[in-house]
Length: 113
Length: 141
Image 1 (cartoon, each protein chain N blue to C red):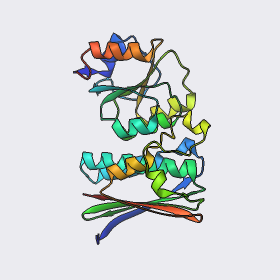
Image 2 (image 1 turned 135 degrees about the horizontal axis):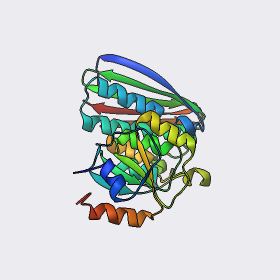
Image 3 (image 1 turned 45 degrees about the vertical axis):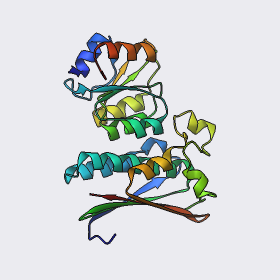
């Protein structure tokens, strides 16, 4: 089992939010920027890598009970999105790595295997 | 289906209000969790209601989302005030979308909304005219 705290350490992620519980289990990974696609295919406990940073990302993550959201390539996240995620208890991480690299590293940790 | 309605609630959905998009669906989800509805059914309802809510925000002049919780089913009715769907059959096709470019850039407009609703509900119906569109989604509990 991998928690979001372990994910943060192993992938050297930067935590942007105060919300979310460190012990939340990451059950699987998801990389997609089409919100309807994520709505259709998402599963509880996923770590979701996306370049989308607007408010609706939080809505989708909440509705699916995702473990966390990871924004790649240091893309700036609006304060309104961070505020909303704090309110909803969803963790957002940021990373300079690409989506591809982040997913490879998650897979190497055994996530989704 | 005839089912005694135990709880009903109406949420307003406003045109192009992307900041609040998903809030009605999130409230519906919270309510269903509170009353102990099965997680798999909540998931189906959350997906379908979110898609319907987003559709109203993107495509309609606004309207309401009503949830009726019954003894053996949950019904969600999304009713907007226009401008209607010209070709419902075409709109139901996965991949067909009339969403403008700025909406697509936000990750919407994949043309999966109505088919996601259809796939996740046990019964779905659409009536549409220039005066408004009503989508009725029924979920057995």
